[in-house]
Length: 175
Image (cartoon, rainbow, N blue to C red):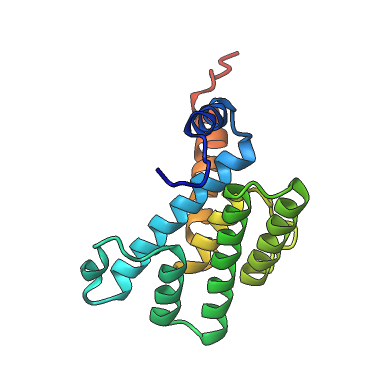
C-alpha cells in the first residue's frame, strides 16, 4: 500500500524476533526508573500548581514536564537548573537505551547522568545504578533534599530491629 517496496512479512518477522529477545537488566532498570521519575514529576507538579489537574489530559511528554517542573520550582534558580539537568540526563540515557545506541554511548550517558546527580548532592562515591540515581533525584526534589529524616528513621529502625530487639528477646542466663 505504501508503494515503496516494503515487505510486511519481513517486517513482521523482525518485530517478532525483537520481541523474543530478553532485555538486559540495565535496559529494564533505565526504562522502569525513567517511568517512575515521570510519575514523580507528576506528583511534584500536582503539589506545585494550583490547577495541576488541567495537565491530566496526557499531552505533556517527559521533556515538557521537566520544563514545567523547572518553571514551577520554588527553590533557588541554581538548584532548579541542576534538577532539570539531571532529569534531562536521565531522559538522554533512556533514549540511548530505547534507540539501541552502542554500549559505549549508553555508558557515556550513564556517566553524564551520574555527574548530574553529583551536582545535586555532592556525593561522588554514590552508587551509579539507575535506581540509585533516580532516588537521588527524588531526594533532591523533596523539601528534605538529602532525605536526612528518612535516613535517620531507617537507621533508628535498623538499630531497633537488628540490635535492640535481638538483645531483648535473647534467652536470659539464670545460672
